[in-house]
Image (cartoon, rainbow, N blue to C red; front, side, top):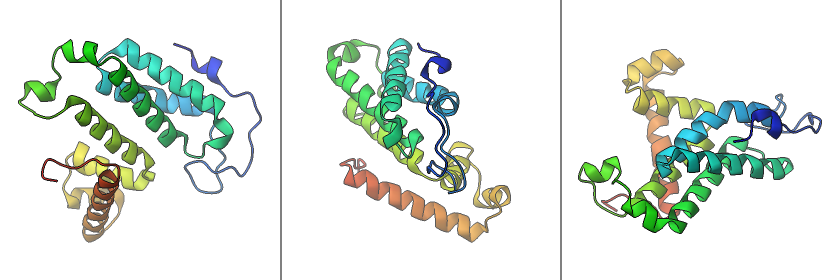
Length: 190
């Protein structure tokens, strides 16, 4: 896999180009994005593919594509997650026979039903939607669903009122559910 230094963009920084932060921030360099996002993207790809070597190749390909589209991309993080997701799904479709003969994934072993590819696509879509959220909204979901904190604990952590935490989480989840439906992904209940 290529190193961060071989992927660094040598063009000069352009002041005033928007990234994921306030208007006063400059667009991060490709090196900064690589250093911040390579490990999470690799975990994301490994979760979809269950093959580390293939996941590394896909993440490398995504960064190479980002380099080629650098001037067109405003939100590199979301763009990278979408690209990794698409590349992983393409790989799974192209190698369906290999994938299906491997040991069943955890959710199948636990008695889950349904198409494994659809489940991976749904999980990828959720990760993509999370990547597109602003940092504050992503933090709320992280605190609630990854750290399993109660609203009052989230309130202390973020400085938001308990009511505001509940309101924001409700609307974030509703918005994500609507986005998933528009993408053609529905829950088992419909």
